[in-house]
Length: 397
Ligand SMILES: *Cc1c(COP(=O)(O)O)cnc(C)c1O
Image (tube, rainbow, N blue to C red; front, side, top):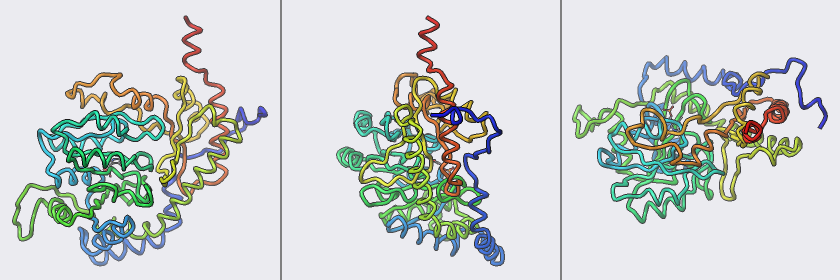
């Protein structure tokens, strides 16, 4: 490789990690008109926009029903509430995920039980799930991390054998597929987030649940409005967790573009694969995989940098204005708020190693094509300038 690619002496063009503005510009007219419609009607909570979005999302996921709510976090909480999860119950989930996956369990007084991840997919390892089962296990909650579905068949077998339900945390995985079926219909209840940076993002918070079970659907509709069964009659205590009509109107517009945006994310991923090969980085940096029978939707394109070099690489990338992020720097079992669970460092070695080694690169659909090459070029330079930690230690010894 020439020196040219190993340094960037001229001021480099900044490469943003994500640009929501770029996406908005492509649909601004449609979105503005949709918001105007809701404002003209002054019906802001639930209503027709929300029920239409529910029908459209159900159709998109091939689910019998969908129920809108206020956020992905609430979707997880509502799903567990509908399944009757409470004190004394255990929910098995991944320690390598966004905080809300475990906090939803805790908020209901149930116990999050962590099972370590697979180092290649970053998703929960079914063998570890099986080992974590106890008579109190009520739900298994796999996370389709970064947009790749979990190993659902093996999880289903375990769930059926032990009488547990499955709640999919599909917040990063709308449109992802496993054996031809979409995320959200691979468990008992699917949970989605419309947080602005998700693949289908609103203009604020929002969430959705999917289920084929008519009774659960009915219960979810009730739980999201304080458990009101109609006429201020409350059979159980629910949440105030409704989707706003403005969000639904915007999301309905964006849903029509989702497949095209997913295709763009997948093209960007393929572009990275080609570039990593061209820059001879594929052996040194582990790329995300897309196993056969899975469709990855790349909410994140997350690589793995071993040898203690990740933080050095990140610093150099940032110094050169290349956006990159660490999802997630601290596994949940060592978060201060979960100290009461009594976990130690070393208990979930794969999750801990992932936290030390992952780096997410820009992958947003509107990313200019040449940015992929800027990222890989900078990564190559940063990687060659960062010494492996093991060498440093050996040298010091
Ligand atoms: C975003 C996200 C959530 C929470 O969604 P909010 O809408 O932000 O509440 C939960 N789990 C995962 C894996 C997520 O990525």
